[in-house]
Amino acid sequence: MQFLRTAFWVVIAVALAFFCMANYKNVEVRLWGDIVMETKLPVLLIGAFLLGALPFWVMARATRWRMKRRIESTERALAAATAAAA
Image (cartoon, rainbow, N blue to C red; front, side, top):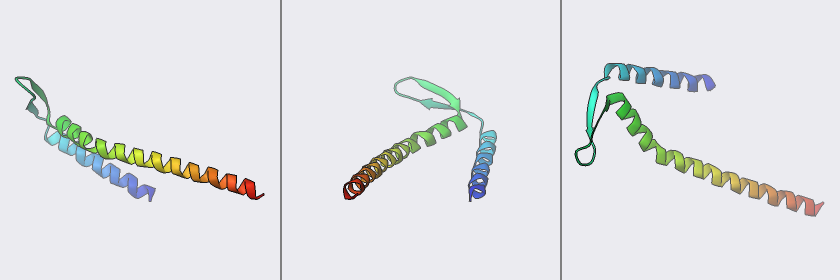
């Protein structure tokens, strides 16, 4: 299973590298007012992807933290109940 996961990420990385090589062009991004930022297209797209993935990553981390706290609380309650029964 680990091999498939690694192979999947290698294919994604190679596809991303080919995309970046094929589209390495300057792009002007007009920000507010008369401010213009000039950047390369792959940098802009990867940045937009990461910015869009950020809320889901934060939500997953918060859920994992909450579940870890809940499991630790349950384990403490089980240990206390086991100690009281013995």
